Amino acid sequence: MRKNRDVIFSKDFSVTTAGRFDLVDLTEDVRSVITASGVVNGNVLVFCPHTTCSILIGTPSKELVASLHAAMDRLAPHDAYYAHDDLSIRTENLVDDEPANAPAHLMNAVMGKVSESLPVAGGDLFLGEGQQVLFVELDSSRPRRYVIQVTGE
Image 1 (tube, one colour):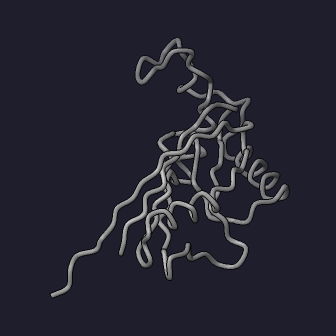
Image 2 (cartoon, rainbow, N blue to C red):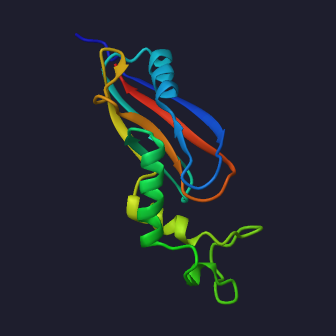
């Protein structure tokens, strides 16, 4: 009879982003959590508990940031009117010092990515050539959190 050796291992991280479209490479953090977990085969989840950030698998570059910025500015320009930012009519989900950040929320809704689940094989993160795990700030510079959770055996 085989013993169950399934593992669930999580670690929380903090980062302060530099501002809109800052890309923070999380790949080494993900690999270190996989190593610490002892999981050889399974999955790793990278999750961001913020509605104005995204987790992305990609190749970081200045050109990617510029292209992302241009595409998102066409989709959700900063100088447009957004009911979300009109505090004379908005009464729901307000926080202290509510920022005008509707474009960041829209970008997150389009990207739809507050998490990524990736395979762990042979005790390492399985990525394609040039791929990295990126935290993308869609709003302004601020302290952020992300969680890496590994499951498997």
